[in-house]
Length: 199
Image: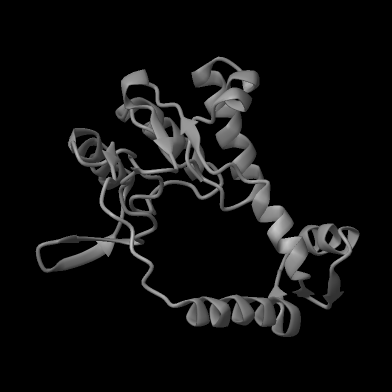
């Protein structure tokens, strides 16, 4: 894992930072954020945020209070303890790409397959500069959509011993990812203590 010991520079002036701060506050209060999940809308409503149709208008102090709950630094455990990493501070983690729907071989661009997915994981495993094997390093379009995330998680867990990003495109997939991680790492309590995947 790379530790960044380079000097830090304040690139923006105080005036520029103040403009950025005012800008994000205006965006969340006046323009809002659209959510396509009724559950999310209900949660924001219950938290006292203004909801109009699918748009949530956020109180900036509410946003800052939520952000403040996230830890500034934490550890992520890998199947191989020597590959566990520390996130935050001066530590920089590097991971494989996320989300390509296609694979290119020479001049041919085609849909990704599960065999491609497995090969990309093997490449990530052998790369000394990657701390994370990634997650959806390509979309394996030849596997059933309803169980694809299970196959992908199993491949991440068995073809690499680095940290990985499980599949979180739906609540069901996220729950399955956590359940599989709990099996691999000794139970839900172990995951509560130290997460096994990046998000």
